[in-house]
Amino acid sequence: MPAPMPEGCPWSGFTPPNVDWCEEQLCAWVTNPADTWSNLAYVVFGAWMVVANRRTQGSPGSALRFFGPASIAAGVCSGLFHASYTFLLQFLDFVGMFLFCFTVLTENALRLRWIEASRMGLFFVAGVAGSSLLVPLLWAAGLPYQGLVFMLILVAVGQELAARRRLGPAPSYRFYALALGLLTTAALFSLADVTRTWCDPTNHWIQGHSVWHVLSAAALLALYHHHAQLEPRS
Image (cartoon, rainbow, N blue to C red; front, side, top):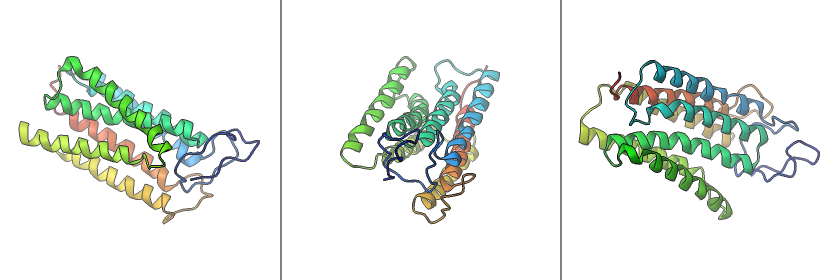
């Protein structure tokens, strides 16, 4: 766990997060520049998804239109966290990740007929709220709440496998394979960062975790295109 910011710094007095990424904390409003500004990738790709979805409107009973806004929200929330490096805004970072995770989980739940379109909003909100509630509970227990996101990714992959068995193969899995490849590569960069395998704390241009942001944002875009090919378009 990183040490609290020194007294007199903009974020001093706040509880630090439960993870210490490689980049050193600057006594500034943006404490980790590389890990902060790399989140613009989520915003840029999210805007791309919004525009793409507006060009070819799909079914109103689909969660596809939420992919772009969820990606933008994830980028903003993560950027605020890395700018502050506090537990308070780390919680917001997880809310952003849960928003995107449950966008995918909701879309898959609709495909699998686990829920009706009328229950889509309830399923989404309950999932995000329930997962978010677990973060402070796990923090109080001293447990690593990063595992929540990993579990949700595994559930999403399980849903895709279930959809293949029940509904038959998708027209193409190239975007899905690309998304998994990007996520895996991104996770390796993030792991190298937190374990200090690849680490230069004074480099405020590129860090392993900043690479995670860019590659995982590209993975979200690939997931959007995978699900877009499954939607009836008007």
